[in-house]
Figure: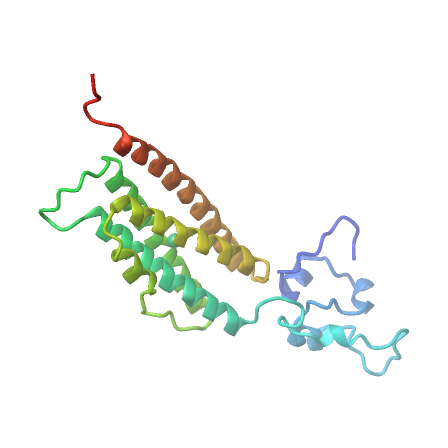
Length: 224
Ligand SMILES: [Fe+2]
């Protein structure tokens, strides 16, 4: 391998060959353990007539799962769980931004814009997840996560937002775990953006909750 090249374990074999990372000399080396079996059988060093200088490395035949990367079926399942959760979050945020007519609970003026912003973000990630699931050959789930029902059972708007933020924190933890096991560059980039966006939204909501709770606890007409 030429010096100065760092192997990106999430790049496919054809991408690495195209990038020039493997030269004719390098191609005689043992295949990298993270290569797919398809790439390995197409690799020029896969010459069974030659004796290996060292024992066969069976790890080289390992697939994505063996190497710690999530296989496609697992990715699709994980993305569908996230899709259902994001759909639930979008519905909760939209319903919270537009409470039933006649309701006169005192809600901070910034509450509705915040909820609409959360709704837009959740819808954006639903679109991304749907695209990625289809790209991986899966079928996007049409379900809405159970989170929706649990959140809508909370009447107080600030308590509901607190619960929504806990859901967002679950998404962050899920994405952090998943990202460590994603080799696909395109998917990794999208999930990373989703993770960053969720972290920002959690911070915004926390700041709003702090302000709104302080305002609610302050008497409108302080005693003389
Ligand atoms: Fe979310």
